[in-house]
Amino acid sequence: MTQNKILIGVSPSVKLAKSVARKAGFKYCRLSVRKFPDGEFLIRFPLELKHKRIFFLLSLNNPNEKITELLFAANAAYERGAKEITLIAPYLPYMREDKEFHKGEVVSAKVFARLLSNSFDNLITIDPHLHRIKALSRIFDIKTKTISAVPLIAKYISQNVEQPVVIGPDEESYQWAKSVANLAGCEATIFKKHRFSSRHVKVTGKISYDIQKRNVVVVDDMISTGHTMVEAIRSIRKQGARQVQCVCVHGLFIENACKRLKAAGANKIVCTNTIQGKLAKIDVSSTIAHAL
Ligand code: R5P
Image (cartoon, rainbow, N blue to C red; front, side, top):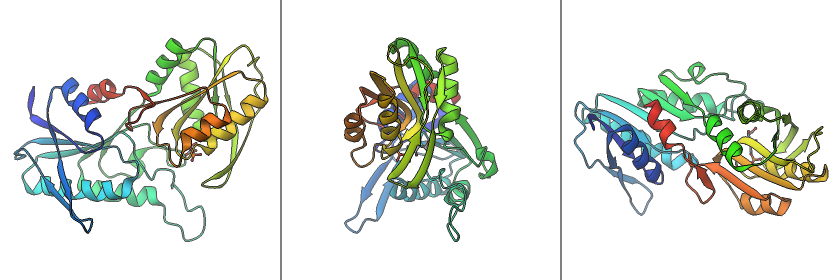
């Protein structure tokens, strides 16, 4: 066990945190957080942090309260003499707000990156949604490491899906869908998406393979409300597919997304455990431990 490295799991990511700590050989503890009736936090460290290298692990879906919690914890850890503080955020939020889409809008990706850069020495994350901002180093002032779950997803498809065809539901999914298909040794088609609002998108695309005899897998970095996937599934079904499953890295599943996907015709939905949940069947703990 590496005695001067402590991995601190923050709820609700403790299961993944524990598993990463065990595989990396780090000492593990769970951050104790109490919430007062007015919503204020009381944070307590169960271990001595002086001269230690601290790794907080917390996935930042539904981010706003978690960010407050983390900033308090990181600042307090420095006060207690921690030597270096790393944030492991398997899911990194705010990355989709990467430009001023409408006049006056805040580019949240940059603001968020500055906030974290002021409180941590390093950041480790999995498949951040980088599109117009090409690398985390463009917006973060600290060391960042990006891990990819693509090989794990490709392995899942190779082992579980016969004769797969991969579909990327929009242009932004290209980097995931194409790489997954290459590693799984199958074809990929990338659809086009027009987004009207958070809950209203239109997805179009033509598949030129005989999908009646193949198993279609729609691959994206994340499923949030599920509307992107729903539109893609509808189009794929209309084009004659009999089997469609959805696979993503980050399963946020907001507002009954799963129900919506099943109603649209998804036979199966699978994601990694960057965010804990019933559909998180692809385990990223060894990949994170390896990166540490
Ligand atoms: C954006 O391009 C992302 O890759 C996802 O396609 C998107 O965020 C999914 O959101 P939703 O599930 O709400 O359509």
